[in-house]
Length: 88
Image (cartoon, rainbow, N blue to C red; front, side, top):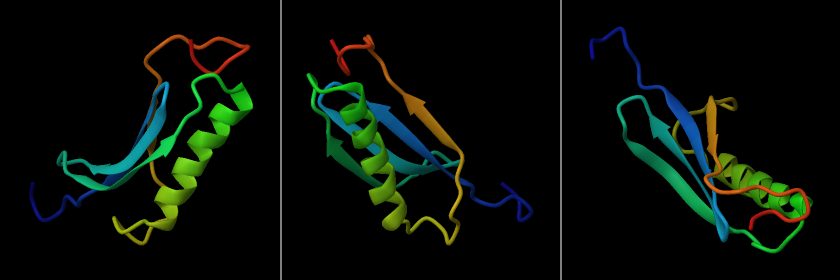
């Protein structure tokens, strides 16, 4: 990387059946601040969404990656989603 290129931070979110993991990663593949929030595997869709937003809110409050307030974000939810419950 040359002097003109800067480190760019983004947020990655892994929505799982028992937890939501979220963290900062940069364009060099380095992991920054990260955390986990519990997910109720038999909860409602609203409870699942609340777990994701709680993880993102907590991560942004602990932001040490930069002084920025906006970041690109990627969200992964490997598994089946069903309307009546968060996960099966």
